[in-house]
Length: 108
Image 1 (cartoon, helix red, strand yellow):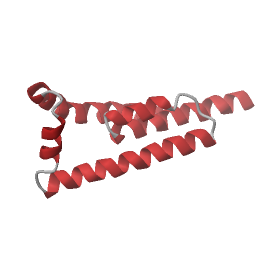
Image 2: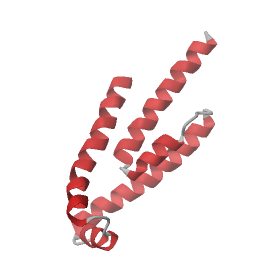
Image 3: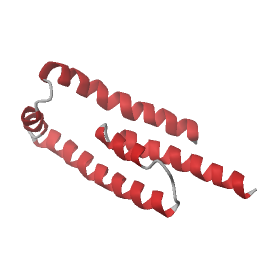
Image 4: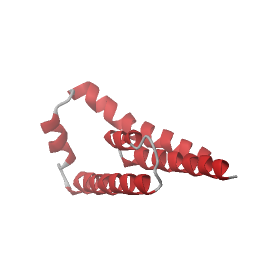
């Protein structure tokens, strides 16, 4: 599963950033323009609303699941929400998988 999570992390970083970097290069950090273009019609507004809600869900999941299993370095997937849930979630699942693997080695 770790290989799948790593591949999803790569896709979750490359795909969104491949769209944002050219926009950022052309417009800089123009937040009003970003907001205007993100809500310019129903389809972009739908996509951004979905990303926003997904990001909130991922943040709650990372925090709750991470604390429940006493995981370390939860700041890493939470900070990756700056790229998007498409990077933060598979990164957290990778870290969780490694945490469980390391815990099972210590038990044996």
